[in-house]
Image 1 (cartoon, rainbow, N blue to C red):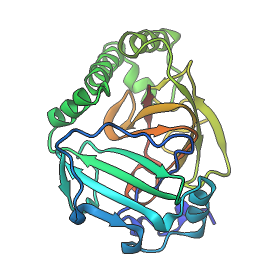
Image 2 (cartoon, rainbow, N blue to C red; image 1 turned 90 degrees about the vertical axis):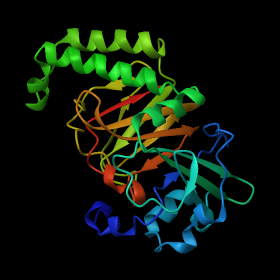
Image 3 (spheres, one colour; image 1 turned 90 degrees about the horizontal axis):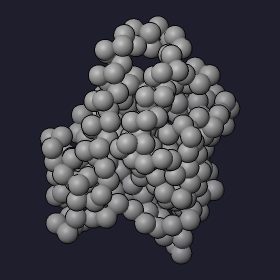
Image 4 (cartoon, rainbow, N blue to C red; image 1 turned 135 degrees about the vertical axis):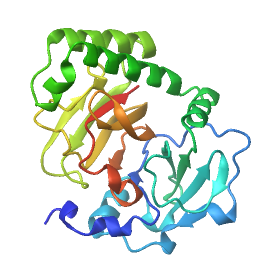
Length: 269
């Protein structure tokens, strides 16, 4: 039985379970005001046991799931465990220590969009450029009557993809940094496809093989990447911003369970 049919969302007490960055231990640069404290450090010993398949996936990336710690911040200040990330402009990243197979997941939330954008400014993450890109695409789609076409599952005209590509180059440069393979369950097996690439860095909606609202996890094939995930077409209703180094797997389980089977558009750079 596939794990998405199990009651896994009841285990969302703390882990979003972004599996291991094999090749590098870097993460978003922390603003100098962000300090972890004992109160905002959550370990897997505090959480329900992970299903065997999740534990095995982490082990393949060289991470002992019992040595994973989650640090939470709200507006740059240490916070207790944040069980519900929706609507809080979440930004998440993982750093692993290959010496002892431990890992630290950092989850940041913000009480306003402006504070989220300011964090992006401080760390050169192009959050403002992302907002401007999204608004440009959304206006183009509305003016040209593309929203009802997309909602009906119709193929959009080539002119839209040309415009999307041109706008991506304007805001982020010529190419994205890597490839992304998606899967239809929270463990990487079953149906999968390389959907995003240096040549297809944005998806206003999932037109490849009906991937809309079906993604349970995805694997990265790149050096480093920032990913923005959205619940609606044309980059509307932000779900989460993630970052990762090297070949790694993002699993929509635990605290990221709310993203499972909900992603309708995505952007990476």
